[in-house]
Image (cartoon, rainbow, N blue to C red):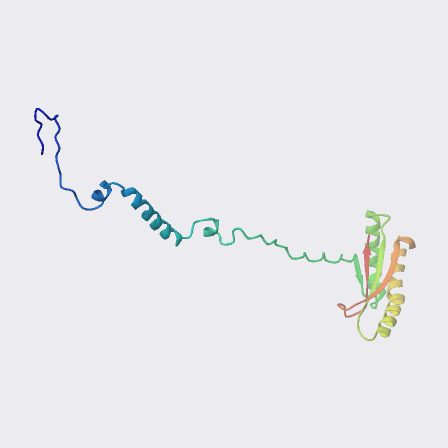
Length: 179
């Protein structure tokens, strides 16, 4: 400790023993020029091993191009139901009165209705046998149904006839559609 004398100005200096450690190191001149690069290198080396948080941290598929979802094709609409389905091999007295009533009701609702008479035969046998069955069924069943439609009040211009094979049926039949 120093005490002021008349010739020296009043300055009191207390000397403390220096502590070892960070405080002692920080008090030395030029400490920042040595510590900052070392701390910077330590921070960089520690952070280089870390994965930065980004959108892929929470959603691994982020940043990928989206794949368009193509829905499956919708099923085809069901075929229209026939107005009447006639097994023409049965006795005509069993199906003709019912068909005539149906035709009259259709004409009452729509006088210009078009009746499509379609003769169906099972698709079995050779193509020649199928052609013969179509011809016989068209003459026997298709014409009988068309004659019943005309006698119920439709004009002959309102009746169309066709014949085809159908693998889903077991016996020949005639279907009547209305348009």
